[in-house]
Amino acid sequence: MTATDTAGAADREAVPELRGDYTADAAATAAFLASVEDRVDTEGGTDRPPTHDPLRVAARLARRRFVERHADRLHTELTDGRRAFPRLDDLAAAAAREVPGLAPTKEQLEAERQRPQREKVGREIDHGILFWGLLRSPLAGRHLMEAMRRPTPRALAALSGFRATGRADLTTVTVERRGGIGEVTVNNAAFLNAEDDLLVGALETAVDLVLLDDSIRVGVMRGAPMTHPRYTGRRVFSAGINLTRLYQGQISLIDFFLTRELGYIHKIQRGLSVPDDGRDWWPEPVEKPWIAAVDTFAIGGGAQICLVFDRVIATDEAYFTLPALREGIIPGAANLRLPRVAGGRLSRQAIYADRRIDAASPEGRLLCDETVPHTGMASAIEAAADGLAAPAVINNRRVLHAHEEPEEELRCYLARYAVEQSRRLHSPDLVENLERTWISRSR
Image (cartoon, rainbow, N blue to C red; front, side, top):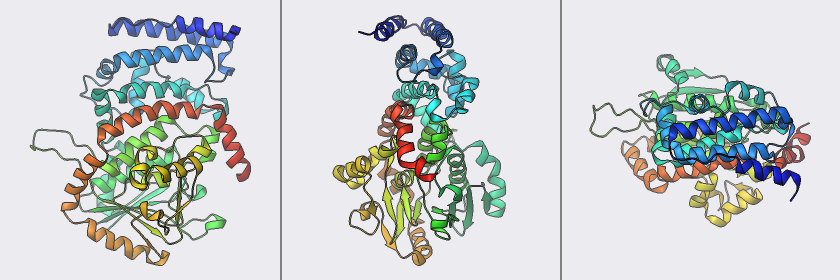
């Protein structure tokens, strides 16, 4: 055993044993985490790899033990007895105040945000542990998921203007009401509609507006015509995650990976949660059927989100890929959803080997409902929207989703996803993968 191994074993042995009393265990955990932070600063731990630093490993063990044992009580304290419905970022900030050291402070996160991905110290792994603990708890996890399905403040502020004009410009996303259709157009042209923290926020606002406008019956998501030299004038659905921003350290576990799954994607799938105010014997979410219009390609996250749409229409030339493994990350909830629609073998080929699936191929028909020439996309959308506007569609999709993917199944998946994705973000191979497969090529 090396000296480092010996020191690491001693650090892990120093992690406090929890006795089951929330107040005492919180105090002991906070004291231990404070001592670790002092030692990291003294011993220059900020320069050590985040996944191998023995001190940080011991601190993460302490965090895991605490949330594993006290998730429900912690969540009760953070949400005023579950009367409040904070979003993920506010919940994490409250956890940092409730048990100092359990989650990064705002100042620590801001300092981390300034570092490229290679130089980060791994603060977001601590977020991964926190949300693993909260989501794996049925009581806390269900409340957290409901909170994330509430309309965003940004959407509520824009709603009256959208209702009056039928249009909202969210910079990288526009929303337009055309008859009973709410069309969400993604226009992050500089990155071929690749998603980053800002685009995820804009997409959630757009989805909220479509769901909140009573005159809209069906939502549609489509990419705008691009200005990229290779795709000038052609629409692109999505190029997946913005790898440039990831390399620069500008992709967040909370604001991107977790908010994406628990926010706009879950809202497309299950609608907006509605407070039970006692006025109705059966409170129902505000939900609508959704159509994905896939022009050219749906790469990575674009392919992932197609799995929750009620109908996917693709052009004859379109294709789907899931290159997350090559990039070094987990492809959202595709590992949960893709085997159900495409089978285990094709799913492994797509996830492990980045297999390209052409929309017009027999395998492609497992991922989309129809293919059309690009000139026929508009009329195909109109026809699909007419069919999905039938009143009984909503009741059928509720029953279908409840049994096809129970919310409890998604909750358990996302608990594990939170901690595993946080670890992937700070694995040494991730930046190496980015530099080998993307950054050098883009330069």
